[in-house]
Image (cartoon, rainbow, N blue to C red; front, side, top):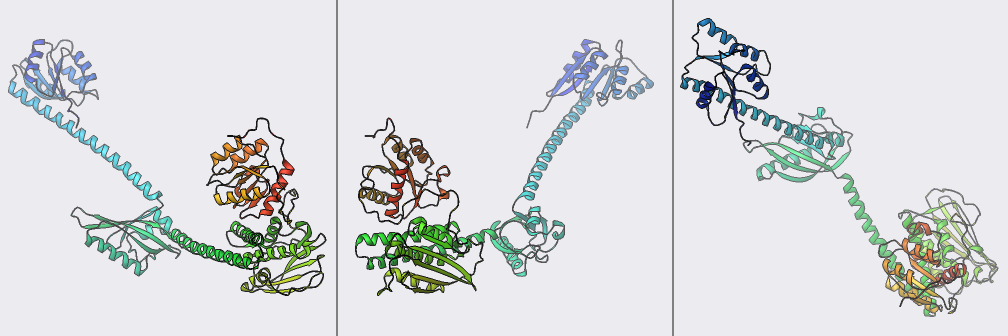
Length: 627
């Protein structure tokens, strides 16, 4: 608490000795005495200070006490100052009356009775002190009221703008508060619900209202004042909302339950998201296990039919790539569907089918995930067989792929011509069995004819999506400028196709880096470094001498834009090797060749030979080998 301000008294007398006597008589703690020897001097002091009492001598030259009192009463600032007249002149009642008329509260004759004067002035001292106390209390109350108003405004703003619905009800569920958040969430206005039972407005059904009532009673009996429960309530339109009720039990001054304040959070979407996430995790687990089982079956069956480890590696890698491409395509469509035309295009991009010797036609068709995966393997097997034994095994053969929709059935045809004379097979290998049986589980019918001019496969599959557009009898294209021709489909077993060239392999997976180095070494090249982090790669690009690079699309979660820019500045050709699609690679370099993981050795060597032949840079001055 601040110190009390002193009380001011004004003493006015033209005789200095009288002023000194009054000052000695009235001196007290907390009292400050101001002295004036004339009316004019007194008026000046009253303009500067607040006074609780003025003691005026009546007889003064120029302006007597009566005149000074009249001036004081005519001025707003001094009108309320109490006045006690002091005089040594005998007076009659008329003169005394004039003093009271001028505003005096008392009229004392000299010589003054000191006890009487002290008693009277003490009254005004105490009155002034009480006024100070009241003023302080008034100011404190005003400050408190302003603070409460500010706090209330903040609380109301929070209640009105909060995403939570804040509701208050009595223990019997009669609603006594319904915020704007509750209006927004549930639809009822405060006017429509206040004073009514929560179970009678359509917000809670009888079961929920009973559960809330029992929970409030349990809070009361258990002595707990806070808790959370999940309840299902309804909007005004009848929609059900699952909500978290955060209870706060409010007590009266006797400690008895007065009301319950509830903050309500709508968790309907969160619960749906959690359920969806749970389903997605289960679906992901299912798909991963199915994929691993498929890979296991492919590996085992390929191994059974492979006459040599090299043949096994070639066939197994190709089938794995076909599966991986289909997975990438489905991932881009969030595993909802895959385009049949894109499945065919992926096989052309992989080199399984020679793009220049293949004609494709058919409407735009979206396939469900499982059918897309199986059909990707089928297309790969057919392309591989055509390249090894059929129409694509010579220079004149051609493959025709077309499909149409008839009566909710997808009719797909694979026809070869111009290849070696065809004779029906005497035994079925795993590839033929895979083609025949992959689509049976999808409700498909597969048949094969073996006319001498070329094998003809026909697939009759169930189909329900809508045809989007007709491609017409044209070659497939991914749009944009035609890419540089790349030699696909040939067997690149030569150990000298990259003879004498130096390569930088930027890859964060050690096994993949080892595999890449092995491929390059077998092809006659030399690997000058295999950095696996962003910093290592940047340093290697700046300090090592090499002819071309293989760049992973992502290094331990870090983008590789900086490395691609450094390679580009030095004029060093490179290709991307990534498990991501082109949309996740550096935008400025989306025209660079991309090979998806898992990769085929032959396709990798073809792409590398192409980029070093097309973009082989002149040796840069100052190129050096670190260390």
